Image (cartoon, rainbow, N blue to C red):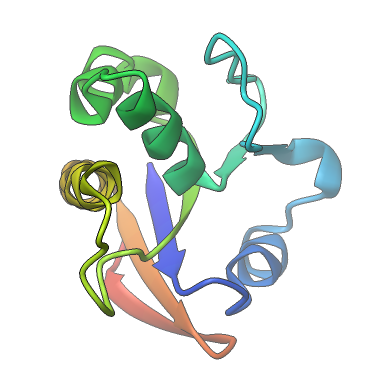
Length: 130
C-alpha cells in the first residue's frame, strides 16, 4: 500500500500519475453518490478515500473496521485522501465523527503502507519511504 494525502486541490492525483506512471484507466475515484460501497479494486489507485469514510460514517458504519476487514483488497493500492484533520473543528457532530474516523483510517493505512507522501501546493514530501 502507498498513501498520498494532503489538502484539497494540492496536486495529489497529478503527483501519483507522474511518480507511478498511472493513467486515468488505473484510477477509481470515490464519488459523492457511491452506492453499496462498490469499489473497483481492479484499479491501481483509489482516489478520494475521504469520501468513502464519509459515506461509511453517514451510514453509522465504522470506516476503520471496513479498512481492516478489506485489508487484502487495499494492500497493493495507492490510496489518495484529502487531509481533513486541520482547520476549525466542525460544528456538526457527524462531521466531527467523520474527521476522527478518517484520521484513524489514515493512521492504520500509513502504518501498513510501504510509503507515505504528503503533497502540499504540488510539492510531495516523503513521510515514510519504501
